[in-house]
Image (cartoon, rainbow, N blue to C red; front, top):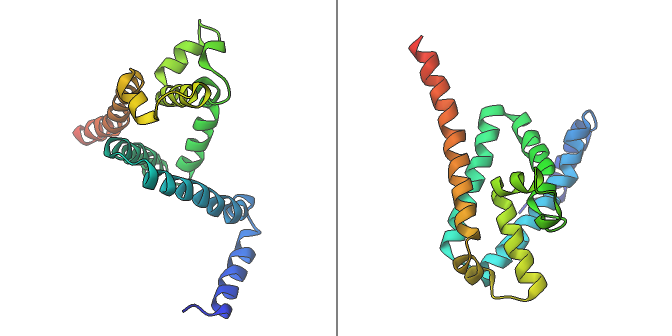
Length: 170
């Protein structure tokens, strides 16, 4: 059992250290809330509607995110958030993709795996269609999502390997 004085000491230590850097101080509030929201809702969702392929591909996407952290360190996390923030309008998070101009934005959205997921979920929520698992299997969204992820994964994994191979050959 952890005593109250131990908890107080840990909180005091973190608050005194994190006042020096705003990013570290925001980490006290941001990461616990994000963990509770993501893992709490994800855990309850997996308990209610779990099927193995979606879970495995979620882990696969997590490994891609960890690749940024391993290659770039702390700045890789910030790069991930900035990239996601930049791509959210093109993925149809806030509005349907059909509203975007066809000449550029719809072409960009076809390359993003998360646009297919958001589109399928929007169909499910707005039109009360079938469950998402059957919607993915009956539509082309899942396969488009997987094709995009496979391409990006191999690109992200092979690029550092080719660079290391070229550096070692010299």
